[in-house]
Image 1 (tube, helix red, strand yellow):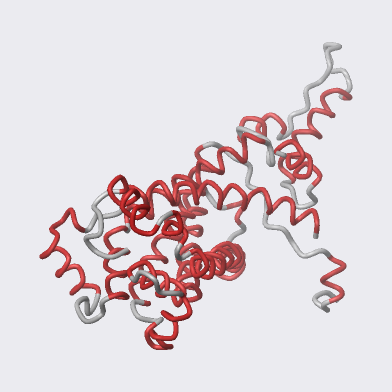
Image 2: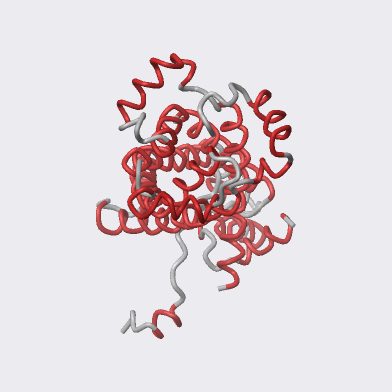
Amino acid sequence: MFSSVAHLARANPFNTPHLQLVHDGLGDLRSSSPGPTGQPRRPRNLAAAAVEEYSCEFGSAKYYALCGFGGVLSCGLTHTAVVPLDLVKCRMQVDPQKYKGIFNGFSVTLKEDGVRGLAKGWAPTFLGYSMQGLCKFGFYEVFKVLYSNMLGEPGYANTLRDAAPKMYKEEGLKAFYKGVAPLWMRQIPYTMMKFACFERTVEALYKFVVPKPRSECSKPEQLVVTFVAGYIAGVFCAIVSHPADSVVSVLNKEKGSSASLVLKRLGFKGVWKGLFARIIMIGTLTALQWFIYDSVKVYFRLPRPPPPEMPESLKKKLGLTQ
């Protein structure tokens, strides 16, 4: 699979021109004219610099593997870091009478469960979101190339080891897939917004805010743009996915209920409970995820092709060109 994807990447019309210099430079070396000493002249171009700058070829198996590793770090670490806020947010959704707000929720939780209570669920969160990051960012890079060429209840259990057998004993195998439908309703629009909004926001920031092109910005400057665009994308992610998140939170607490019943009982106002906390959490998460992911790309010297542009034929069809 990776070999075919790598082949498509090399044929990708949106591929970075910098990498093309490597191939052009090697061709120049083979066909260069002799120098004064009779030896082939080595043209001073950017080929050697390009080879040294990037650790692998865009679209190669190594490229996708390192992108997947960046996804593991970006999602696993960030979601684990905000477990306390997520726990309080969920409790506000399922028991608004007891947990009346963010600060009150933290206060009640600390009083009843102590500091360790805020970390409940960190292990399954880390494992689950690490795998999500591996797939989400890894396949994002894969399909970006392919498509461009196509144009729970508090106190239930303290650890994952305690929770898994207890869930299976009480409800069987279906317990692990109880909220899959509303979960998809949350994650699919969330993920679509995460990548689409981030790409467009980066493009807009370089066009209207940053006073120079991305190619002229230093790596730290580019990472600042990444963080800002990630936070903006996170705000929109939180808004589009919050109603389904509220349903999932309540559904995981109530046995024998269904998504339609929960949605009907909560009503329009109820599904937006805790939105502010989720905006803070998802905005911070998304910004840090993109920052970590881009930092991994910088650290491993992965090629960074320019954003794809709309084909000229489509621009003319839409009347965007003269």
